[in-house]
Length: 227
Ligand SMILES: *Cc1c(COP(=O)(O)O)cnc(C)c1O
Figure 1 (cartoon, rainbow, N blue to C red):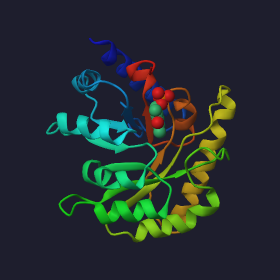
Figure 2 (figure 1 turned 120 degrees about the horizontal axis):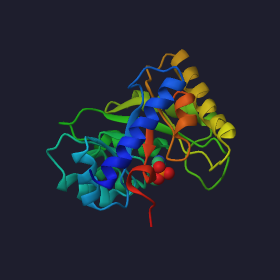
Figure 3 (figure 1 turned 60 degrees about the vertical axis):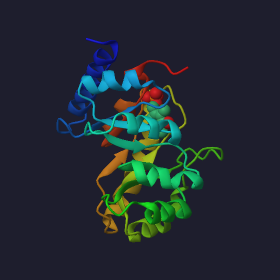
Figure 4 (figure 1 turned 90 degrees about the vertical axis):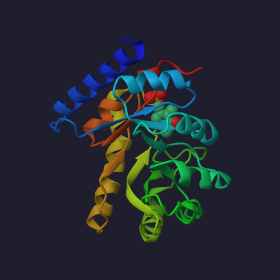
């Protein structure tokens, strides 16, 4: 077994344990392998070990990988900051975008989604730690952006995403995930049919699963430390 296959199976085991401890059904958390900056051979090792969903943050690098690995039934998720001159490539090559945080970007993704592809699955990214430098909208902006995205014909609003500020204390890790879950539930009460909470990375996946994550985005634990 390759190192990547071994790490992948350790991550899967950790997810199952966390599901169990949180009293959630087995298989309710989807594993997104975050393969940004990784060479094609690393992705191929993960694919050989059964991984099908990959997350990428840099558009050009991602499109090269998507093209090289076409025809294998893979599902590609864009999770990085979005510049408006990259929306056409994103709309043309990805099944999901987790990092929508502006009306203009949402509009462009919908306008540029090719007609022969199903609607692009979208999560809205929230900034819950209040750092001015981080991407993501403030919770107060959520109702307006959700309403706009829900109206766009070639987007399918699936849920919310957040990247919390790093926090080593597991007890404190849960707060932003709890907050995201509350915002998610409020939108569901308001009539949105959402099913996705994209939250949890290598260092906080258990806290995220405890608070209801449906997709965890894991890079380091699968592929090793990034340079
Ligand atoms: C890089 C990245 C991850 C993966 O982080 P790890 O700590 O390596 O698991 C998850 N989400 C986003 C948005 C990222 O950019």
